[in-house]
Length: 338
Ligand code: KG4
Ligand code: ZN
Image 1: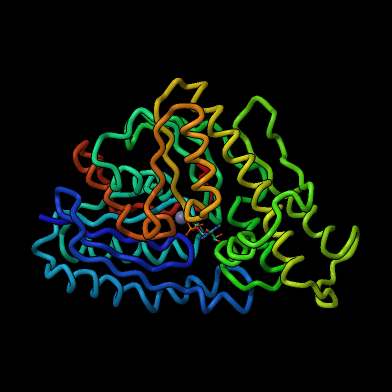
Image 2: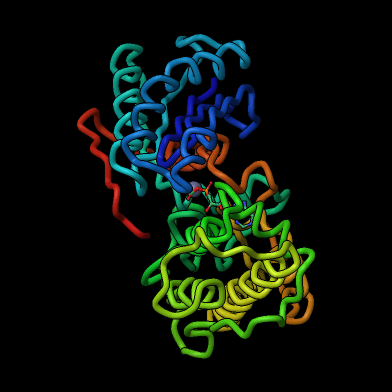
């Protein structure tokens, strides 16, 4: 028996077929990066329409690749929270329709918990108890986990998410969308100490984050205080690299410091990290170094499971084991931060 998992929380339309042991039998992702590139960010209306066009072909492809039909499915799982309302609706309505038509149980997935479950998928031993950091385009949150489904929210961003800050800095420097990979490429050539950007809340004894001040500091470094017009600014590649490197260092310093503090406070032996920004090379190497220094284990989601995908929807198997099913009146929960 296998399950079908559906993911449409932001701008990737994805489906996967996963067997009882968590093996991926089929997997399909349709990315919308090209559609949103011209706007330098995800446009919710555009995303919802694109999901609508793609959702059935994506599900079809995942099932065909897996070589399964409706009769082989034990359940249908879908991410119902958090995310963009229009995007979530497409996945949830598709899942409910198929569950009704094929008479299958429905399972609701929290997208953020799934990002952390991607770490369990990459690890041969149980990762719990642990501290979990989700760093994505929409979220920057810390949790204490005692199982895949038992998570205590410790704190999160009070303004921009880390990935959003990467995307906005990339937009200021005309580096394209999504900004993370481009900023990180320039950063690799730059001087991380060229600009003394703020590390907001780094020493404060709580687990919240703030990245909007950092974003403003980068803007001032490019155009000066009070200025908005980036079109007249001409920067050399070396200057862009220094800005990106100093920005990236500021984000990474805060993420590492807060995560290390959470590991110590909850006295766990492992930190797990998921979400699109977890693909960042400098964050990965800095977390590795911190783990060695402070003597804890680290599990970062593999690169293909960092950004949005349906494979991490394997967390649905844990819910099925606990008998946690959703009803056909399942609704979306866009804004839930936990
Ligand atoms: O998890 P994800 O695919 O979508 C959300 O749930 O938000 O994360 C997308 C975010 C984008 O902001 C993107 O710029 C960022 O992840 N990202 C990166 C890197 N690759 C993707 N940020 C920094 N460095 C990267 N290499
Ligand atoms: Zn995500």
